Amino acid sequence: MLIVLPGALPPAPYAAELASWVATRAPTLHAWLPAARATAETLDPAREGCTAFEAWQLRRAGFSPAPGQPYGAGMGPLRAQAAAGDPEPVWLAELVHLALGSDQVVLLPPDAMGLTADESNLLWRAAEPAIADSDFRMTPLSPQRWRVHLPDGLTPRSGTPDAVAGHPLSAWWQTDAGFRPWRRLLNDIQMAWHELPVNDARAERGLPPVNGLWLYGGAHAWDAKPVTDEDVRVIDALDRPHRAGDWAAWLDALAELDATVFAALAAEDQPSDLLLLGTDRSVRLTVNPDGFWRRWLPLPKKDWKAWWSPPV
Image (cartoon, rainbow, N blue to C red; front, side, top):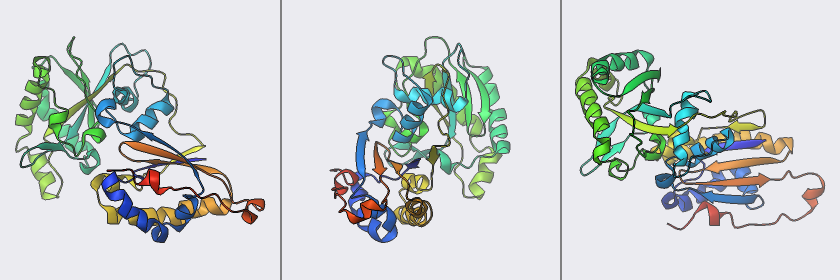
């Protein structure tokens, strides 16, 4: 059994401090860490255009990027569940909130939006005239995203919303002339959404208004394999507090995981692998069971903090 844990690896600036809490909040995990075999990998979200969890999903699904294409381009057809043989590359537009700071614009994490189908339909109807007057075509796929058909010759380089969220958009936003038609359409849609009643109602409920679209994807669909099966279990309890930087909530979620999932695995006395994922790195732990004969042997000790707390 492979247990996949998005958000299990804190960013380097916080990892050392949080490591000191693992023993008390997650004793089962803490007992495994020095004895488990660890295989670490790093990933550059700026280059690959996706997070480590998304890269794992794409590998599991059998995606191979085209030459020069960022790995995250595959999240377009994967999220759209596009069929192999679709003649067009699959681009998606995520309905997002662009937060204006004192000196930069950042994208809020997509799961902070909480969009309903009714809200998305109202936003779609408000945006339809601008879309119809452009060279782009769009189709709603779900409350949070639409499929986009780009004009011929436009092939922007982008990253997924999860890879981009929280980082200055200046590092991702294309300013060349070829991208101007998308910028013009986005500006028209933003104007249509400004002071839209649906956004006012969201603000009254403490939710961020939808004030932008984030374009990403661009790969052709392939015959994707299932990402999970009976031997793979994804548990995302740590993911949201990780991306929000809420480390108190993260520790609470870790304690709950340890008391339920990890303790149950230890009681079953079966070998398991844990895939711990951060934004830009992953560590696969092979946890051997403490079978009867092993309980009489000293466990090898490894310096797990070397990969848990990388240099800042």
